[in-house]
Length: 216
Image 1 (tube, rainbow, N blue to C red):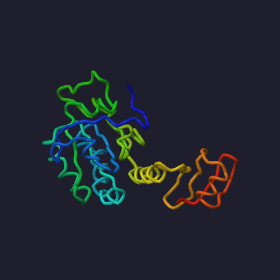
Image 2 (tube, rainbow, N blue to C red; image 1 turned 45 degrees about the vertical axis):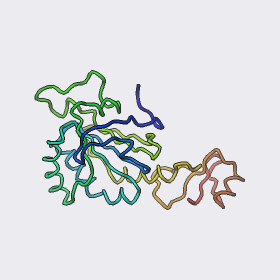
Image 3 (cartoon, helix red, strand yellow; image 1 turned 120 degrees about the vertical axis):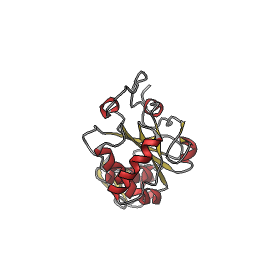
Image 4 (cartoon, one colour; image 1 turned 135 degrees about the vertical axis):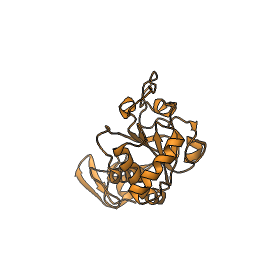
């Protein structure tokens, strides 16, 4: 069954560069970002892990943990981390899990149930393990972004999307296209104009169904 937004993220227990961990317990009461990769020692993925290494403090400011999912062993991850850190100029201070069993790739619907790792495999054998998941404190999936192997991820956009998720979580607002923190938000359709003004103060109605307000 395919995963959808607001589904509970499948829980799992596996080995990682930070020792054995269970996803839900590891997330705790904050947010989490899982970013997956088809193979260690690949060029695009190395730049992406390097980007995350530099951004760990930004994720921490947002009460968010990051976890790398790569379809290789912890032993290979430990070796690869040296390349990542040399490229990034920053420590790769986040767990990278062992998914040689494809447990996580299959649980998160990135590979079919019958998938396996052939001898002499290349990244193309697990090319679809290229999804970013943002998971909330309630362990529900808030966002998914899937990239092909040839396209490096934009982590500034992932941070922006995380900010938007957190700004709208449990609040009757949405964010418009290209929104950034501090900018006006869209008032939810669950509020009529009177309720919107009571909650947010002045509203800017561009259309009857498109009303902006200052974030609270």
